[in-house]
Image (cartoon, rainbow, N blue to C red; front, side, top):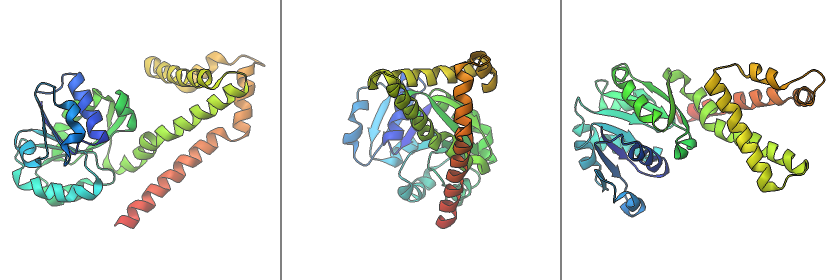
Length: 266
């Protein structure tokens, strides 16, 4: 694949590393205004570092935009005259709708929005994808790219706000749960380093059980809860204190806030 990452900041660099290490490229153009920040990619075969977006677009088929939101419209207008029927536009810009992109480059272009989360840095992102009608013909390309960086799922664009809460903000929510587990482990006698290790790997194990077995969480819970046992006692106390309802309410509040921000931007 001939790919250009337009705006190789933290997210762009994470994507680039994933593409390089999984041999997903024929050519890879990385653009940044200050190319000194991405010199670490200079030694890789078939990787070109440049501050020239025009060159990157002309030499690539797949364009992944990972620029700052404030710069996106200007850059789109700059490259729009260079776009051909071969180009696939993948935008990682949060909140920038497909219709706004189409207003600049036209409805005839393959346009896809991608919303990865910060776990993309370690190849474990949950990335949500949506597209315009034309872009549906190229959504498999985006899935192939982001499946090399974790897992991807195609959803309607009207669910992207909710997906931001579940997947992007969700990283913070899970971090807070891991932190709370760590604090409990310290209170129970482990030192801080041991406590965090226990919390992190137990969380990872729980997720992998569901991913591997395809079970509902309650099926796995049933395997570790015994009559009058310590697990069910702890679970019931957490529920009495509002664990599930607090998490749900927090996520709904986050969703309401992101919609308020979107309305204010219109």
